[in-house]
Image 1 (cartoon, one colour):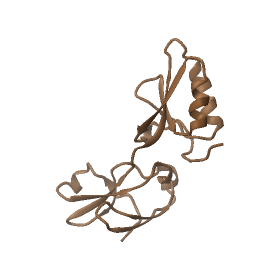
Image 2 (cartoon, rainbow, N blue to C red):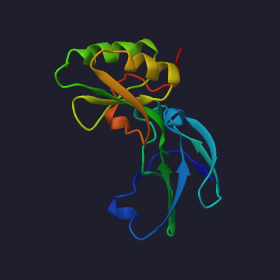
Image 3 (cartoon, helix red, strand yellow):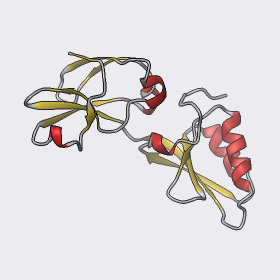
Image 4 (cartoon, rainbow, N blue to C red):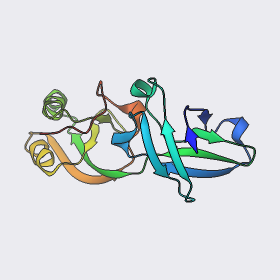
Length: 159
């Protein structure tokens, strides 16, 4: 099966009552046009998106296939991440944290509050962040939400 556009969100009324099958798209693959995947139910899925995916990406619960009985939706699986927390009495360290993460060309995401941030896990980056005064970091498992990205691009490049 070939999927060539995003048809909507799984929560849209038009998809109600249909069987849902998922295809996993890793967070760092979400802004790529071409994929060949196997869905959770074992269906071979070819994905060939237009250039718009380069800026909007494939997001959790995007429907990429629908017929009368079923839909295939995107699943962004959780992955290893760094959770960085800046102490509230050290707000200027947010700039230092952003600089250090940005200097590695790694994507950064806002967290649950103004002092929590997430970035893909790299041991050397974890150590560098933990060396910043007023910032603590730990390795966690996180499902990235691209709507909370602080980066201008999503990539998996690091030093």
